Amino acid sequence: MIRVRDLYKDLAKYDSKEVVLKGWLRNNRSQKEFGFIDLNDGSCFETTQVVYGIALENFKEIQKYRAGSGLEIKGKVLVTPNNKQPFEIQALEVKLLADSAEDYPIQPKRHTKEFLRVHAHLRPRTNLFSAVFRVRSLAAHAIHSFFQEQDFIYCHTPLITGNDGEGAGEMFKVTTLDMDNLPRTDKNEIDYKKDFFAKKVGLTVTGQLEAEAFAQSMRATYTFGPTFRAENSNTQRHASEFWMIEPEVAFNELADNMKLAEDMLKYVISYLLEKAPSEMTFFNKFVEKGLIEKLTKIVECDKFKELTHKEAITLLLESGEKFANLPKYDDDLSTEHEKFLTKHFNGPVFVKDWPKEFKAFYMRLNDDNETVAAMDLIVPGSGELIGGSQREERLDVLLKRMKELDIEEADLDWYLDLRRFGGVKTSGFGLGFERLIMYVTGVDNIRDVVPFPRTPKNASF
Ligand code: 4AD
Ligand code: MG
Image 1 (cartoon, rainbow, N blue to C red):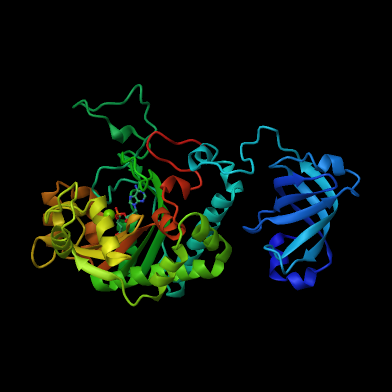
Image 2 (cartoon, protein in one colour):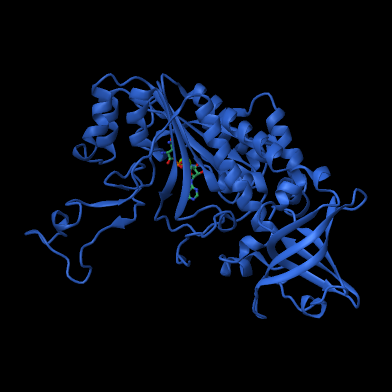
């Protein structure tokens, strides 16, 4: 048996040779004396055309083989340099390995993405989702390569934690307490001492705080794992379970941090353009026209545009554009503002030095006492792709900020230790992996770049 991928790699070697392929039938078009099967064997994005003729003893049965069926094919490789596909297989034997029932939902026609979401277990069999999930896998590899080539230490941070690392109150609880009979304290509060971990814990919203512990010893570290947010945002860009990449580097300041983010993005995009040409061409043709040009421009550009939050607001106010939400110096950017900025600069934009009020407690206070050394990278389509900052390394300033925000000191004592014992400057960021996949494929809904998405009111599969 051979894989179609192997044929593509060394086609000349297999010209006119007999091979055995195993795969699934995508489409079967039969005529009176011959027929064509589109076979996908899973080893690559491309499907292979198998031609079968009336001379085959089971010709009449082959004609009836249905979409989704598993097949074994013995045939001769015919190189076809003038066709769209570089070769086809002339069948000598076609064997049914696994029949597919008549009501198979993935028929050879256009299905809506909504329909396919309901059949998430079958959708990897379509071109779109095969391409998306192959690219997702390659992008994960590229991210590891990028950091490993620069000797970053991969840190596995815990998924179950007592820290609300972003202080936003969006943690899913993890408990083994009996919900119908909760143990109570004298004050009638839930007695978490009786719970599995003898304290209140949840699913992590970020690995950053633990990554900081590694940065203060290993210098350069990164996490790459699932994160969870019980954020009731029903948008195209929010998932309740998503993967995040979080590098953290000692001695780095905000400018170094932005450079790292830009280098990483360029590396991953170049990698995908090189390693997934068929998939990227498919997206360029059927999902986002001009995608490859957009991505190539990013790789080739000198430096991403960078402006402060204040400059961004001024630009929005002076643009003459009518916004539903009026841009304000003391407010967050809304989606329409982000859209305007990425369109205006025609590419990714770093917005830095944000008012401290709507950023997390750990971000370093700037000398103006009003803004923090934070940066968001916003991109067309995915909006905020990256959020990061230089961390507050000054214990007194950090303690003061935590007090202002009512964050319990005792819970984060270990984090404060990092400042007490040789806590140098560190900086880092979080890249939302799904938002990256949306950006590089042009797919506009986060539900379509996660194999089995979790969103509010949905945890099927
Ligand atoms: O901006 P966020 O909340 O930053 C952090 O969690 C920091 N601890 C990162 C750090 O500095 N180490 O999240 C980072 C990124 C966002 O820019 C976005 O791409 C993604 O994570 N993200 C989400 N992606 C999908 N669904 C959600 N609900 C997301 N929330 C954040
Ligand atoms: Mg953010």
